[in-house]
Amino acid sequence: MTKRSEPADPCFASENTASPASSASSDVSAQRAGPCAIIIFGANGDLTKRKLLPALYNLATEKLLPSEFAIIGISRTAINREVYQNKVVQDLTEFSTGKVDARLLDWFRERSYYLAGDVQNTALYQQLATLLNTVDKAHGTAGNYLHYLATAPGHFGDITQQLANAGLTQENAKWRRVIYEKPFGHDLDSARALNRDVKKVLGENQIYRIDHYLGKETVQNILAFRFANGIFEPVWNRQYIDHVQITVAETLGVEQRGEYYEQSGALRDMVPNHILQLITLTAMEPPISFEPDAVHNEQAKILQAIQSFTPETIATRAVRGQYGKGCIEGRAVDDYRAEPKVASKSSTETFVALSLSIDDWRWAGVPFYLRTGKRLPKRVSEIAIQFKCAPFVPFRKTQIASLRSNELVLRIQPDEGISLRFEAKVPGSIMRLGPVNMDFKYQDYFGSTPSTGYERLLYDCMIGDATLFQRADMVEASWAVVQPVLDAWKAQSAGDFPNYPAGTWGPEEAQKLLARDHRAWRDSA
Ligand code: BG6
Image 1 (tube, protein in one colour):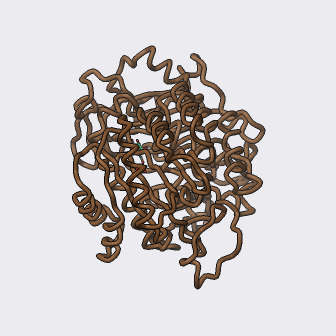
Image 2: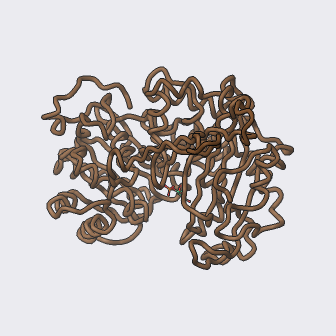
Image 3: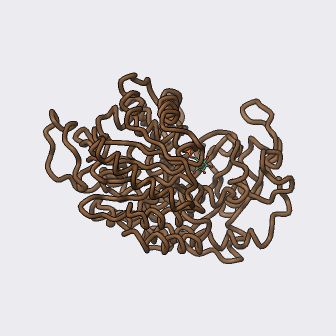
């Protein structure tokens, strides 16, 4: 999202390469990234096969990958290059978002390399340096490296230091960048420590802290919706908005991730990253440009303005839950404690609801309610802006005693789109009102563009645009918001778990959170 330098000739755009100052991937004039190699730590993991490889494939089909390109996979599994090459082709065939082309698969095959080893072993990085030398010569990747750390987060600090020791992060007329998968830290202290560690060897401009929600078109569209239209900003404040509801609901349980999730829980897993990103984009002031720092400064201000939780507000404004047995989409499902690698008396929350206040001029007095959880009745991520009701009921001598408020819903997934609810006269000889929706669906206007959500983020990193990544202070400010709740919940485990049946909208307390303010969750019945 950095400023475009020269408008490219559309006839040749796909054959040019992007300078670090060029722009977004999905633009008609987006250019190929410059020569580079991507080094994936965690090459045998789920993220690599389901998201990263298919995203690289999509970038190649969009002609946004350079022809001077290579992939180096690193993982502990002892396999040779040929086996890895076959795996890349197999994963692309299985997980691509569209039809695969045999010639393009060959293109990926011939530029895929593999190193087996333990990321703690110094020798691995020497081997990597040697291999990258060979790759640079064979594929013209020019010493530009994108290191993607898709390993357990506990290794991030070590890997960064080892890469630096092996001379693989130094930028002399080349670029060297590192993408850190989520989670960046486990709490505020560990996030600070990790920031300190990685900044010892990298400049902030080399550090890309990823949050895959920012790769979603619909999340990026929040900025377009707010700042490319004149009619919404004037009402986007406490004078017109009553409150905001953010729901990120999943029907899935923890699947095979019990080990990770037991250490994480719903609060850590979703709030300081995905949901706070949604809140910052919804609440931030218009940035003076779409340069990374201009956008990040405004996002950071919102994070700093979120009122800190105290023991008293945790009791009334924070709710946790854990699912018991229940029924999802007509299918009986087990309780969380019966999931693989979950303790039989686990006190990990699988649901969280919070009420946040943003203490700034625009939002004072407007609660931001958020809820997220596993095994809820439907899969939906959305931001609902609830406007204030009209100030009085002008329909005298009718049966209309009260008015419903207008509601604007930004649907992030599925069924991506935006809808505005307003009141209309129901046809007939007496005055009656009924709610109607003005509905925009992405699919209707733009068709479906299958993507993993990682394309834009990978491409942006290759061209040096950090707008959709998180800056160090943002990560720390996000952890600071949830830290008091993490501490309080750790100090006192919930006595009533499991407290919601799978397939329901969380514990009763989540309803009370809004009922106390004389409000209710939309669609929560
Ligand atoms: C991940 C969480 O970051 O986001 C998962 O670790 C969660 O627990 C996932 O399921 C949700 O992402 P999406 O894109 O499916 O909404």
